[in-house]
Amino acid sequence: MADGSRMPWNGDDTAAQARMTGAYPRIRMRRNRRDAWTRRLVAENAVSVNDLIWPIFVAEGKGKREAINAMPGQFRWSPDRIAEAAAEAAGLGINAVAIFPEIDKAKKDEDGTEALNPDNIVIQAIKAVKSEVPGIGVICDAALDPFTSHGQDGLVRDNYVVNDPTVDVLCRQSVLQADAGCDVISPSDMMDGRVAAIRDALDAAGHGHVRILSYAAKYASAYYMPFRDAIGSGSALGMGDKKTYQMDPANLDEAMREVALDIQEGADMVMVKPGLPYLDVIRRVKDTFHMPTVAYNVSGEYSMLKAAGERGWLDYDRAMMEALLSFKRAGADAILTYSACEAARLIKAGYQG
Image (tube, rainbow, N blue to C red; front, side):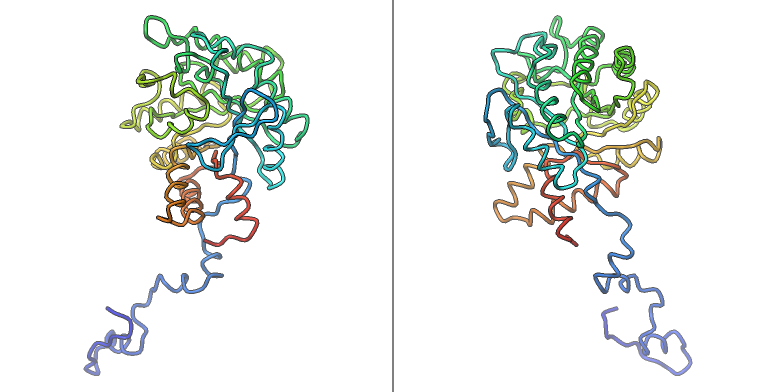
């Protein structure tokens, strides 16, 4: 009933008497919502700076800090300046950055051989960050899509992305990145068996301490387009797709099998990508495996909120923080998000929502 309303009392009805004296209902869920301090006290989840990983982009050239049109507020950094981005993150208390490259088109070929260049821009970026910001963690993808002329994550033979030959290249790529100082190798390719093969390759090369964060449940999603613009793989991919190796958005049980296999093969952490449309997957992965679970708040999710915020259709800060909180509520232990620095500043300023 509406607040302040009263039911007739006949003198014998104790429930009616309680209603008249304001004691009905006995359980009032709104009591704990009355004051900000109570809401903070009983909050079940919270986003902290320790939850955040900032994806950053490295590009060919020198002295570069180039805006990414499809991702407002994000930039491509040249190897000689990318440590500036890492230092910004570290200064905000963010524990790790993930490095993604935009490769010069002239260096791309069908087999992505630039991925195995021991002086490619990813290797340069790793060395620069570890030299100038030694306390921050560095995460790198194991995948070929930034390096291939066709934009696929692996080697293509007879119009099909072949599995085992691709895994061989990914192992060599991973060792090169670990040699340069990468702390976490993150296979994003979705080839079968790649986690075990990369684990063996890292161990054999003396990198037993290097962790593997597997893209265990990575879906063939429409939410990756701004990212593909940022690394220059979208135009290469053209009208192609990645449905023969990335997961069907319709499937959840299959994701559990993928995650189970990656754990068996030696993954230290597992990822669900994208994040917001797949909160159910995050929840089930966490409840099933009790593994460190990472959500990727992908480029399309970021750019949608940015665009709506720029147009005044929503409050960007509130919507962004609500999205990050949803990952925590779903069970994520950490979040890759392009909003990491913005979120960190809000948290440090005492953001309460």
